[in-house]
Image (tube, rainbow, N blue to C red; front, side, top):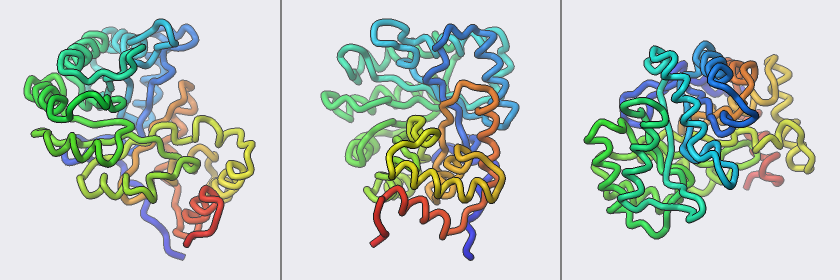
Length: 304
């Protein structure tokens, strides 16, 4: 039975030459539940000690509908201020361009401010990857590209990416950029399989973009599936998980990582044990038969 290759111990972020772990940790909920800098420090150490050195945050993380904008970045900044040596152990990514209640703003003045504000909150001179979080339809891609190129030229940002962009929006921005994109961050999971057929991953491979998958566990639905389709996907994952001695979550991460585009799943948990557990995905071996069984369950119908 044909086996797919195991994921590599590290990946290169786009064509940047920056080496990243094949799994990332996301801090969407880092600032929730009254977490202190000490709490956040333990989580950062858990990720780094497990070899998960690609950390992804955003300026909107922490916003609760009325306040908290920037709180997750500020909490990570407190961690880095207390232990500056941690910065050299991580590849640090953040995002901007969402401005409640507008909701999106990629005008030149706001983008410049958003990048500077993120650096200030994070207490760093530069980030390794800066991503536009969601596209602003009212911003011309040429204007956006100028600001992003300037951010790279100034040293504030090492590489550029986008999140939740369509294929056409990526192509338009890429056309105007001097410093080309290295990453795209769509929602991908065994329950969200659009990108396998709609051309997003094909474009990523063509342009050399590293796909970062947000919500790789289907927003928690894989943990407690209720709909028939969700249960079928969970069962297909469980067959591999049981055979290889890992959890369903780890099987889901590894299923994404088996794709030739080099998908990097972003672990969303803020639990130290669950973050560290993600590294087990590196040892899960998929056959083509098992991989397609998950896809068929997700499709809810046979392959054509």
